[in-house]
Length: 255
Image (cartoon, one colour):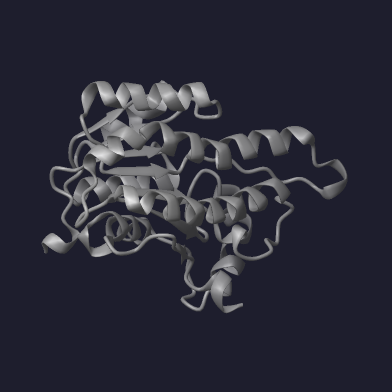
């Protein structure tokens, strides 16, 4: 169905070499898009390209997105290869867990830089390419990856992580209002538990208990994340903006 077809579109997925970013990149490729993935480590990008090439045309551009300069460089590098970018997925992020008494200042600086400031500066850096792609009937798309920890109080001591994700959800709404007239939608996805490097240790220890919190009785699968990003970035989601969609099996929204 062309309702979910992304053939001919160009997508950029930050943090697209593993975990949720890799799941999203695969879904975009399977729907027909050309995809650029970005990661701090060139070897991680090479490995992701090797894995994802079976699904479509994909390339890696390494970047450390904790600084505005690198956000601008990533947009410049993509702009050397593409005249338009139809989809920007702001997924690169980090987490930090530590008790209140010892939670360090560095944990705030690192997570706010990567989880909150980077999506803002990246969106701004990519605006010319996004505006070039967007039309009244088929806007360009920005998808921010938040977290259900930004929707409810998390069970872990992740003060700066949950705060940064809640702030990202609200930044999504602010940008949606500003960029809508420029033919760009801005939405956020708030994932629950998915198998990823960030969640591996937690799921290994508490996986059964976490799955039991969901009305659906399981953790997320790669297709669950691929499906939501394809929906938001295809014609099917062209009238959706300023939304935060929980993809968590109901954990945050039913408790």
